Image (cartoon, rainbow, N blue to C red):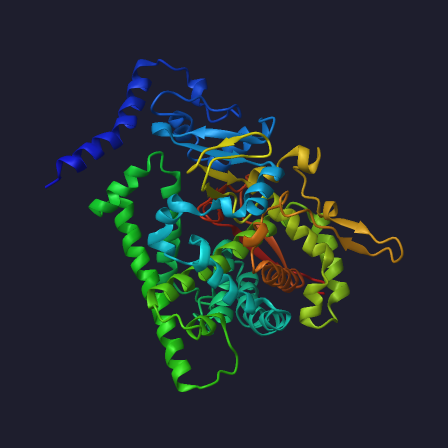
Length: 510
């Protein structure tokens, strides 16, 4: 039986919804006030804030926020949520630097972020601050030296590419099968991260493309956890969790499945460490288990966080990359030329020195970043460099997706897929040299103290896949002509409905 306190909370939760229907039925406000096509600052009303605009744009949230930011003189605006809560969105590099670097300790993940993702990520590295975060980052950093990166490319990525990915593509080309490349790349990345981080091979990318309860559960956990952030009123999902109904019941079931999978990996690794006094190679999981932390739940959180990082980000980046290449043959031609030039080099040297391909990947992630938006919570009152006033407890969300579309940052040709914007010719040799943008204009890998540890590993993996696939195949989208895929995001970006492709063997393999 519901208590009086809970009944009151539930009524309070439903009040904005009732107001919404009242407003709709009485036609007090014009449709333009919450039009999904408007890039103007969304109107805010008493009690419900900008709920009308949020609801109207729920299917195109990233695009809508980007439109508003592009129309803001400072590339920043404050979104008014129900019951007086406010959230800052910014695409201003000065603000990004302020939040991620110069005032790093002032802006943390915060209670809202941690509470929203705690069921899924627990105290993993992406959901913590302070000493817990520092410890995980310090231990993890040992896995990203040159020796480890070389091993990753030559003995993990290349083996998975040669033994699993390429045979699947050959079979698809021979049988004229339509593949969901997004699914294939997720499987590839999942096998990769499990091998390098945990010394475990899930064998998810087999010719039979096996269904795995874990993979489905992981996808559901990511999706539903992300939907919590997009809830107009957080009390709605909290109530559903309390009652164990709807999406929150699905999340509980999914998280239990994910955690059982992670615990099984940990159990096997512990047994391996017990039997062998010294392992032939030390992986990330071994380091954590040998660090003195025996709390199984904590190590489980760490495993789940690294699966999220390794599986979802690089696969998202490559999915959009292959789509962009399909509509930009001149860029593909330049990449093929570079692959041909590097084909006699050792594997690690080949991918490390692929300058044009590196630039094209950066350009692709500018337009379709794997993490479209990320936020921090203010620990105290503050003022951003552009004059935006931030109160304690407010979330400040920087928006890489919007930043990649700003003419003031990338010029009038910002909408073009042009790798050359990242390159310049050396005066003496005439060779192309990569010229990166600062991490606050291009925060695709975050910036400051929390900049992504796996940045170089991700680039090496992606370049190896690009070289391995394009050397032998053409990837052709199996979509209606003129139809563009829809960019959506959970914790990371996705191509809505997958990426159906036809694989064609090249006549002139490089």
